[in-house]
Image 1: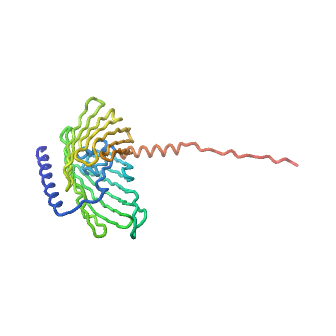
Image 2 (image 1 turned 135 degrees about the vertical axis):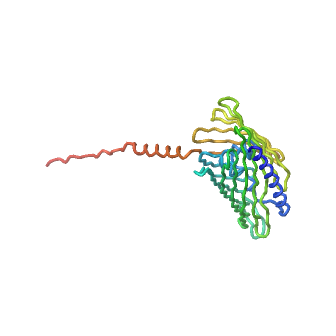
Length: 338
C-alpha cells in the first residue's frame, strides 16, 4: 500500500511538470507581487520550507493538503514592514470539520508605498501599488497518512490609483506521511489561473511547482527535531531550493534556522518561537543580500479545540455570574422637627 501511494506521488509529479511546461509555453511575463509573498514567521525562519511539513494553518499557502491533518482550530495574524517602504499584512484561520476535512481562509494585503509622477494626467504623489488576495482552502485525509487539498484565490490589484486588475487562481497539493510520522513528502502546484490584466497589458500568474521532503524525530523526551527541504520551480525562472530545521524544547521554546538557494536577495534565515496551550508567537529574521538590510517578521497565533473554546466561554460566563454586585449606600437625612 505504501509503495503504491509513493508511486502515485511520483506519477503526479511527472504529470504536474508536464502540465506546467505546457502552460508556461503559452504565457508571457509573470505578475502579481503579492502572489509571491510567503506568510508565516515560523516558515520564514526555516527558510520557507513547508511543502512537506504543512502542520498549521499556513498550509493554506504552501500546501493546502496539510489542512487535512489539522486537529485544532487556528487563527493567525502577521505584519511585515518590508524593504523600500513596502508593507504586508496577513490574517487567516483554519477549522477542522466533523467529516474529517478542514477548511481555511486568509486575507493578505500589500502596500507598495508612494511614487512621485512628473508630468501627464497622473502627475503628483500617488500610491504605487496596492494588492489584496483572498484565499479559500480545503484539505482532507483520504486514508491513513495521505491527504489532498486545494484552494481558490481572488487577486485584486491597483496601480498608481488608476489601473485595476482582477484575477482568479487556484493551488493543488498532496501530502504523504509514512508510518511513524517521521518522513513526509509533499507536492503543490501553485497559481494556476487567469491573466492579470491592467488596461491593455496582461501578465500571467507566477506559476510554480513545489516539491518537498521533511524528517521529524524525538531527540530526547522533551526535545524534538524537524528538518525539511523544498525544491521550487517558478516558471520561467531557474529552480530554487530551501532548507531549514526546527528544534522544539519542552513544547514551549523553538529554535529555527534555514537557507534559501538560487534567489536574487534572500539567503540566511533564523528565528524563535514561544507557545503554550492556547497561544504561540513566532519571530523570523532574514537577510536581503544586495540591499544590505534585514527583514523582521512576527506572527501571533491562537490554537484551540471546540471543547477548549466551550470551556473558556463557560469560565467567562461563570466569572460574570459570580462577580459581586456593588450596592450603593443611600444617604438618609433626618428632618428636624419644628
